[in-house]
Image (cartoon, rainbow, N blue to C red):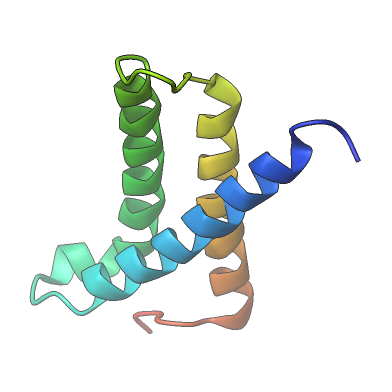
Length: 93
């Protein structure tokens, strides 16, 4: 396995779970628009949170920032979205 690759898998796995939790939370809101776009909003929030987390790490002693972590985080969210679309969890139909 490539060095650092397992770290990216962990990022993707954790952020796919985060996307699932965000999607469920948004889906059960009282606003029709939020419910309709809950999956897209969840993926967007995963991206923004991953980006802000890496930005924060730039200023944390002993930590480093890596754009590939943001990519892995976002891919975790996208992977959840694709699985969701395939198996139709929490769809407003």
